[in-house]
Image (cartoon, rainbow, N blue to C red; front, side):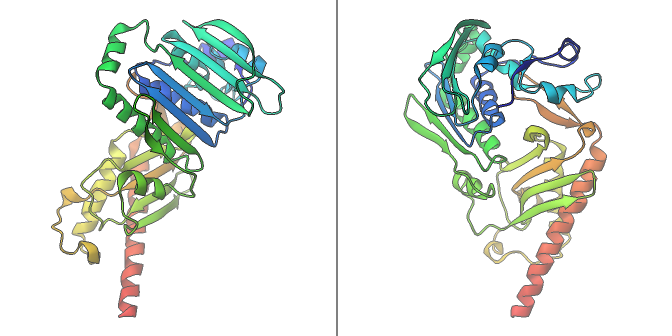
Length: 366
């Protein structure tokens, strides 16, 4: 993890630095992103809804003692240099440094860490944003960080009761959140456990693409055709995977779009609607024959829900970062026109070229 420093007064007075902890999912998200910031390749998450408990263990670079002193305090982050380089008068950013402070506002927070190359590990305990203990700890022999959150929402009885009243819903939300992160961090091993039932909710292994994760978690067969996306027009770039428009999926849940800075999730909206409409448009153009395995299935445009994992790379000036209590910050584009036009041209061309090539090969083979 980069060195943790205090934000200069000129910066922290201009950026949005508050993190609202509204539910257990948000806590898990923030801790997982901290692990990824530290370069972790293994992240293990244990959750107990009834016991108001979360534990995240990673093999990242760890935190030095000096960094741990500042960790969890307001306006302290590992992203000082990054923020200082940006135009804080016109931009709005979030950063992970204050997430732990916000988490300690509503829980008992314990951090045990050992920095790479350091002889000793350290422990810090916080509650109500106050440090209760800071000292040497031998609990971690290897490099990395363990964050344990206990007695969550002890001072917010309504939220705690709401959380405890629907444990299955909370666990499902956490699983979906970590899965969404795993799809764009395919080189990282993620594991999510329910400590109260000892059930493993999610387990991903490092891979060169997100397709194995789709197969194991959504039951998508290996026979389903996916095309690798690698499009660019200079400023805008689109990468990832998208299914053949001839494949029929009834679920629109397997559609993920991200923006490149920190792989921010783009909530369902114009991009998702566009791709679904493009599949219907491509169908109506009748420029191809249906894939053999689906020839006998009745089709209509409402069935066409292509599966995709798309990562859009673009200048920071193209979008705003929007936050809500319900979810981590997401992306809203200032002008959707150029973005949607680029995606439409690229996806339609990709589908047409691949399907034309397949049909040409079929004719040659016959």
